[in-house]
Amino acid sequence: MERLKAKTVIITGASSGIGKALAYRFAKDGANLVLAARQYPLMCEIAQDIEQKFSVKAVAIATDVSSEEHCKIMVSEAKRIFGRIDVLVNNAGISMRALFEEVDLKVMKELMDVNFWGTVYCTKYALPEILKTNGSIIGISSVAGYKGLPGRSGYAASKFAMNGFLESLRIENLKNNIHVMIACPGFTASNIRNSARSKDGSLQGESPINEGKLMSAEDAATQILEGYYKKKNQLILTLQGKATVWTSKVFSKFMDKIIYNYFSKEPDSPLK
Image (cartoon, rainbow, N blue to C red):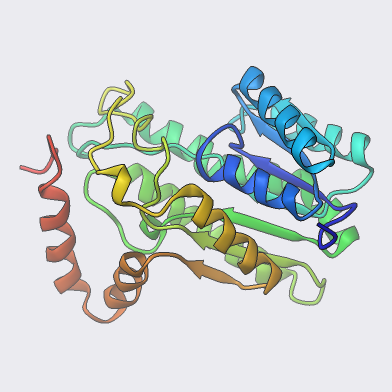
């Protein structure tokens, strides 16, 4: 409980999945929390539950990370309430499932606005406070940020952009004693696939993957927190995720075929 006592952690996309699991893990170790997401009533319930269980302070702030103004206000409120910001977890994200040939470009833009620009906006306004506390900026990315995945062109593009942004930020601040980590959970049980956008922007509704066989959000959160404590630059979870990233660097064409075959076997796969 004492490891993060008096520290303030902002988590975007904190209403479900890995974001919610991270909120409980950080709180368990004593951190005060700012929970940022669009589902404000749900986040209020989570914040109240966390306060009761861990005797920390948790505040819910309604935030659409695709809005620069929302992100600016959220960070400002975090500073006003707690007086400091030690960790920013850029977790908010959405996915897609459609061939680029068929997808409405508004879907591509929405993914970039949330996954990439949401990270940029929150980081821009939190960075001055992170510099003061020698804190950490964590980006919850994806294996799709290292290897493009069929039917997920917008998602992969947004995560590649996120990874490049955070790597540049880390190098720019090598002498400023802040920690920047890119965490790639691999396939993890969450609602990101249920809420993935179809080619016209509508919600997919059902996951094409057996969620019961995937790493739990809680397990992912535990490993991400350990990566934070060890000040890792990069964290790739699951054997499948590690194999995909590292094999792709050496056997790119071979992995293209493996990945195509894997995704073509999904229920209602968009791959012909």
